[in-house]
Image 1 (cartoon, rainbow, N blue to C red):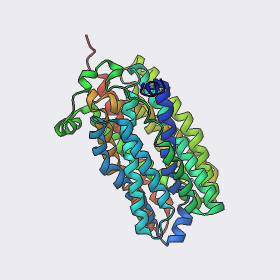
Image 2 (cartoon, helix red, strand yellow; image 1 turned 180 degrees about the horizontal axis):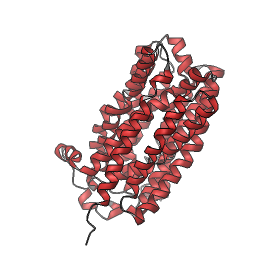
Image 3 (cartoon, rainbow, N blue to C red; image 1 turned 180 degrees about the vertical axis):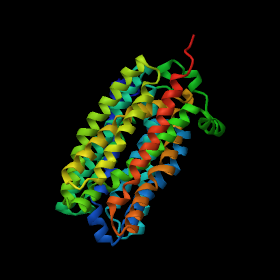
Image 4 (cartoon, helix red, strand yellow; image 1 turned 90 degrees about the vertical axis):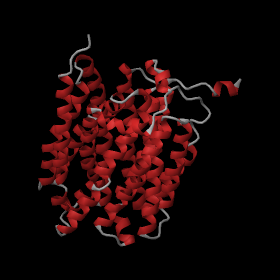
Length: 415
C-alpha cells in the first residue's frame, strides 16, 4: 500500500511547495559568494576583475550545460535530473569552502553552475504541466519568490557566518542541506508533459535540434529573451557588486551592507515578485499584453531610480534608490518566465527555458560582474562610476519588452 501511494504523482500544490523550497536553497547557495567577497578577496589576494571572474566561472558551468538539460528535460525523467542537479550544486558549494587557490575556486564555481543548470531548466516545465494556463503565472510567481528570499538568506547568513567563523564555513554550511534535499522528489511519480492543457500527445513528441533552434524564429519568444538578457546583464552585476558598492562609495561596513541587501531582497523581492505576478495575471485577463506591459513598464521605472542611487552622495538616499529599483525589477519575475514557457510549443518547454538560460547568461550576467570589476579597476577602484552602465542595460530591456507589448496588442483577435 505504501509503495503504491509513493508512486502516485504529487498534487500541484505539493509540487509547487517542494520545488519552491528547493529553489530557495538554489539561490541561497548562489548568493553566499557576494556576501563574503571582501574577506575572500583579502585571503586569496585577488583583485576586482578576478572576483568578477568567479561569477563568470559559475555562468560558464550554468549556461554551457543548460541546453543539454533542456534537451533531456523534454525527453527523460525530470525528477531524476532535478535530484542530480541539486546534489551536484551542493557538492560544488561545499568544495568552494575548501578551495586553497583562486584557480581551484574557479573550478568549483563552475561545478555549482552545472548543478543549478539542471534545476533551473527543468523545474519550471514541471510546474507548467501541473497548473492550467489561468493559474500558471501565479504558480510560477510563487516559485520565483524563492529568488529574493534565497538570495537574502544567502547574503545574510553568508555575511553572519563569515564574520563569526570565516568565509569558508559560509560555503560549507550553505551546501550541506542540499545533499539530503536532493532525494525529496524521487519516491513520487511525475506528471505527464502537456497534462495541464490536455496536450499529452503533442507533448510526447520528442523535439529535435532543429525544433529547438527554431525557437529563436518565434518573434514573441525572441523579444522576451532579448529583453531578459539585457535585464539579467544589469541584475547580475547589481547583485554581485551591490554590498561592495555601499562599502566603498559610502563607507558602510561589510556586514551591515550585506544585512541591508539581505533585508531589501526579502522585502522588495518578496513583495515585488508577488505584486508583479498577481497583478500581471489580473491584467492579462483584461489585456492580452498584460504580461508584456508589466515587464516593460517595471524595467523602465527602475532606470531613473538606479541612476539616482548610484549618483547620490547621501548614503540614505542611495539606499532608498537601490531598494526602490530592486522592488520594480522584481515585479517582472513571474511574468517573464510565464511568457518564455507560453510562447513555446508544449513539447519544448524545458528547451525554451534552456535556450533562455543560455542566452541571458552568455550575453548577460556571465560577463557583467567582471566588466563592472574591470571598469572599476580602470577607474582607479571607483566602483560608483563603473556601475552606471547597469541602468543603461535596463533601459534596453524596457524598450524590447515594450515592443513586445505593442506587438501583442496589434495581433488580430481570434474569431
